[in-house]
Length: 271
Image (tube, rainbow, N blue to C red; front, side, top):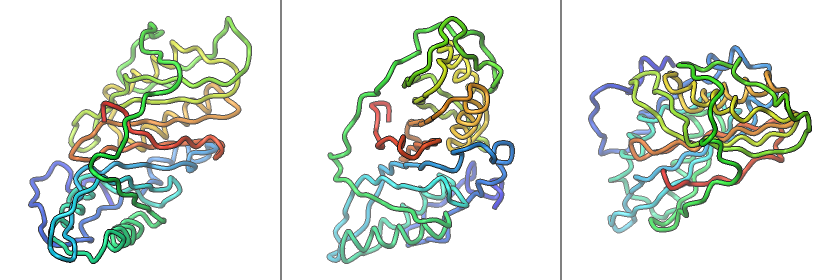
């Protein structure tokens, strides 16, 4: 379905009755046309944290939880975020015999929308721990140059150090825009890399170049992965972005060239 037909940017009434058909799938294929051949572009997961989950138990008493939704990168569709928020709101006044029954209903509905198995893990309201980022932060470096939109030509190898090895870098300076509403999306991006050493300043410049780019979270991560893979030619690569919360949701896409490099999902302080 075309994103122009979605609920993004529209005035919306919040449903008070269970409404699974409000979920709005968006096909991944069109955004992947330019890099569908890139190894690993469909390997990985999208983790979502849902901070506004509530339903009624069998006695009609409200229950609350924080959810972690896991959607495979190989799914035909991603799910538009506002429709997901409205879907979870539609469950606020629906009774379930158990937490397990709630999870089963949600997983069924989301799997239909994504056309792939989607799982939901629930945490008590105080139980989703905050993690510290691991790796080398590159935010204090001087970027090689500043561009207003993603520019893969920024990416360079380190010409002064030809050694190969494994590194993990991260930057808190990721910013992009929702392609429909124009609202800014903020995130931290992690890059794990094995191969000839890249120029860290060029990677920082490349990350900063997304600041006025219009793209969904998943599409930005896939473009980063493809550009790094094609321009720096690493042996292995992981790109994982932890975006900050908007509308009670945060989205955390991860793509890997090697499934053994899948990280554990985390939640950072900004989320």
